[in-house]
Length: 434
Image (cartoon, rainbow, N blue to C red):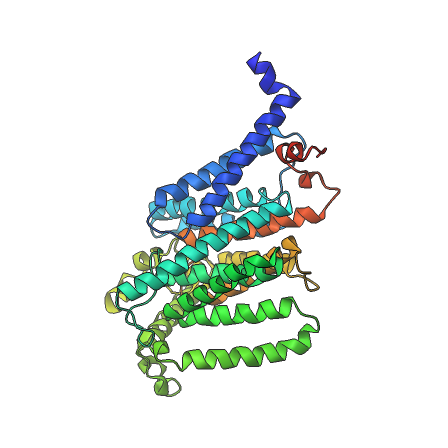
């Protein structure tokens, strides 16, 4: 009797409903805890649980179809170039581990998130999870910054919050910033504005206290894009936004916390004598360009540590922080060859092309606002990663999570597609036919 109950249509619907609810719970918890570096096991459980139960829901619900999304081809090419790098890797076993950790988990995260959204309320739930997570991280950032004796006028102590450091925390802020800004338009009752505005302010302060100029550049650019995306006459407004953004960046870059030991007066005459963080970046980028020019199609193997393994002489003669190229796109070009760089650029371009709204989203239009926020997130993420490589670990997985949710939300606009069918459990809750 139990077997019949499970295999009958009603039994399948019940199990499909249960799996969707459990998968949704795992994914929402994962959204909250993903930037909290100390709880690695919980993140792994969240990812596995969300993927397992949403996959079971897809298998049990006969009305559901897999969502390939428009990203299937560039994402597949990126994964293929990563696999191909095994055959030219400086360390096969290390690259194999990175392939499983970064690429496989990233693909699983992306397609798990893409199958999560079936109603607008599912996006609102993730939005709420982001607000909770960013609020906790912002409060922790300010508290720990003060506890460690940080000063807003000196970059010797930087805000890292509960993440692994100021670099990862700054990247997390770049990822959530457009969602925080555009959530104001997605708000329902106005009584929640008193929560939203302080959250935006706290996260802006946390971003400043990272003293990361790349984070400042990315977030100011994202703020301008958020203004553009919700207004008409975008070309006319673009000039005003650009001027305002340059003024804000000018103020930030003239602040005491923006100086990291550079001698900028040497920039034109002798770039190698600039020193500081910028000088280190110029040195590693120049070396990387020279190595890439020798054999642009032969990668050294996926993984940031492949740089140290392939170029031990450079590592021996330069400061310890220069253990990789400090630029996601340069790193991937070295690791996977130019074909890998082209593949990841195709991934980014496809996301922006699919998600950028052709007209301003209306207030309360959750899916289009989420898609716009994700397109802006991708742009900011790329800018931030021009000066370091955080397309890895938690920040990389969070990128795929946000991208998957946005691409999955596009199916909400296809009312005739089978893939938009509401999970049976949700339909039963409403007493309507899916």
